[in-house]
Image 1 (cartoon, rainbow, N blue to C red):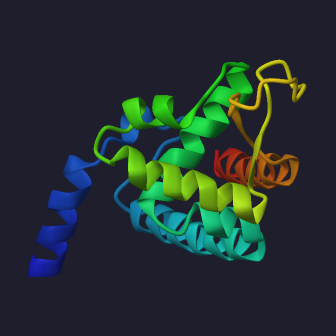
Image 2 (tube, one colour; image 1 turned 180 degrees about the vertical axis):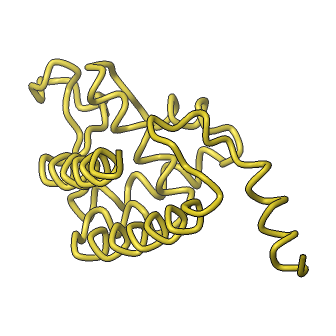
Image 3 (cartoon, rainbow, N blue to C red; image 1 turned 180 degrees about the horizontal axis):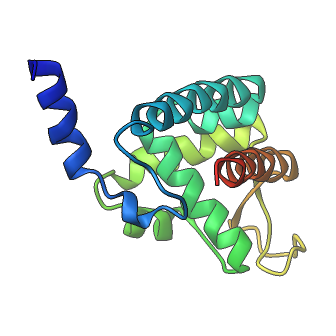
Length: 152
């Protein structure tokens, strides 16, 4: 057996295929990897076509902040810069605030009162993703689920 075959067997033996809803054998695992790799390239192309997603996914800091804001929006709970800073302690409040403010400036995030009305309190800074950003992200997620479902 040559070194490449030995290497492939070691890799195959360490993969957790039992978690998948379909069978993968020693002959098909590389095809699966190739399919997933090709799809990830497509996801990046799709993301780049959406200005908001491209901005939010430009680096890991923005991704983490976006996900905190998105999760809060979907759960219907309030989220503020301070709360994001608590949930992502590896970044300073200043860094998080700058990214959020930049997102607001670009129109990717918006400030809404917790009930959706602006109200009279100017201090309310509940952060929500824009409608377009929510739509673009969910459409990207639908493409991912559709791809995974087609591979069953």
